[in-house]
Structures are given as C-alpha cells and as structure tokens.
Length: 321
Image 1 (tube, rainbow, N blue to C red):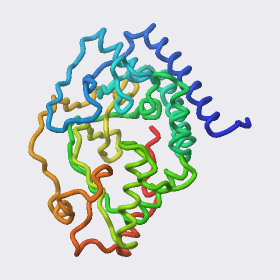
Image 2: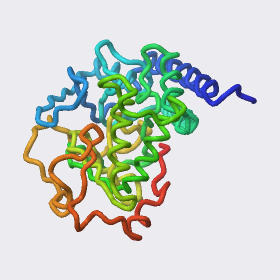
Image 3: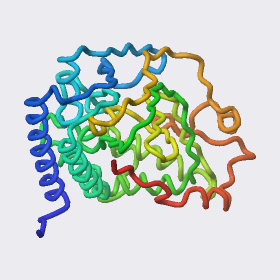
C-alpha cells in the first residue's frame, strides 16, 4: 500500500489500533468473568501538570467489578479521562491472567503501537502535534505504550523508584539538536528576541545561545530530580529476572500457575539517595534552568574518547512486548 505521507500513515495506524482495541474491550466486557486479577492498583491522576516528588501518593485496590472495568480500560483505551493532562497517563500496575485470544490481540496491537512510534519518531515536533490534534481527546502516551506479556510468570515485585537521573552530553551536540527543532518549525534558527516571551521556542533559542558560548568540546549534564514511578522486578520462566517500569498490568495466560507477587504500597517521600559520585561533579545551580542543564566542575568538563564510546546511538532498543 502506498501512503500519501508518514503523517497520513500514522493517522491510519492510530485509527486501526483504536478500532482493534475497541473490539477487544467489547469482547472482554462480554466475558469479564474470565479476567483473572492477581493484583491491581489504581494510581490517581495528578491535580497539577507537574509531578510533586515531595507529595505522598495514595494508591487503591478496586473491588472485583470496578477492577474488571479498570483492567479493560487500562489495556484498551487510548483516550483521556476528564481532567487528565496530556502529560500524564491512566496508571494501574498489576498482574492479570487473560484468555489466550485476548493475549494474541494484545500482542498484535503491541506491534501496531510500535509501528506508530517508529512512523512518528522522525517527524518534526509540529507534525507530531498536528497528528494528535486530529484525534481530539486521545493520549499520545497511552497510544504508544506497550502492554507487557509474560510467558510463564514466576514472581513479580512492585515498588516505587524516585532515583534522579544524570545524562552527560556534549554541549555543541545538544545545541545542534535544539537548532534542528527550531529549523523544523521556523525554517531557520531565530534569535531569542524574535520569539514571544515565555514561549517554548524562546526557551529553546536561549538554550542554544547559552550552549554555543561554551567550548565545542565541553560536556554538560542534564540533571533531573527523580520523580516517583512504579517499577517491577520480573521473573518470567527460565529467563533471568529483569527490572522495568510498570504503568499498566503485566498480562499472561489465565491458566498459568499461581504467581508470587510482592504488592505495591502507597508512596511515601523520603530523603533523596542521589549518587554523590556523579552528582558532586556538577555545579549546584543550573546553567540553563528550563532544560535542567548543569555545567560540570572545571576538572570534569572535557569531552573524552570514553564519553564518545558510551554515547553511541541506538545502544538500547524499544521493548516490543
């Protein structure tokens, strides 16, 4: 099939995914008694656009009928609830047994989600915005997130993680990526004073100007405070246990033997356990606050051959299922 454009292809894939998931939801509702709920917790939507890492998070474990509806929604809905922000998703980690045909449909729609991700990834920011605006009320994040499928689950441990992240990048490489974003939108790299006050593009242009001031071989750090999110340690069959994020339930055949589950509890903030070895190398005050960019202390600023090796592209692939 020949597609008019990548954007048109993405729109077709989104419509196909939504249709298949609505069919799955209808079938699951008609046979909801076949849903085996081994664990399920609902995480409330935020009442603010940003995560407050110092605030506790009270989770809830819904009762049977409510839990079935939540399972169906979390596994099949691409659409936002009333009051949901575009920057957040409906979250309900858990461990769920399903009929084999439902697992097959989820595996097929996971491939569709991955296709949408790959088609949209190279597009400009404005092109991506236009795609999602064509589907009023849809969540881009929910559309592209994968439902993890287990073959032979043995044990699943749920827990909260709020570890901060530090990414070391070359200042001028980062400036080049930001410049390309501006070129995609404006056709050139505008100066800060050409752009509206408090606009995202103005902040991007300012960041470019600040980064270009630095030496071309200086490294900078993108440092973000840890935001609480749910993680899992999964032991599936004979494979080695692995750790991953969990915003949706892990699913498996409903005839699987009993799974050993360490339950999730409500989140209680505590003092940050940031790794001092890396945090202590960067300046306390951000160099560009809007992008969380910090300069390193003078003795750690030089970009080295080791940095080049560790920052090779495509070292990680997106998990498909």
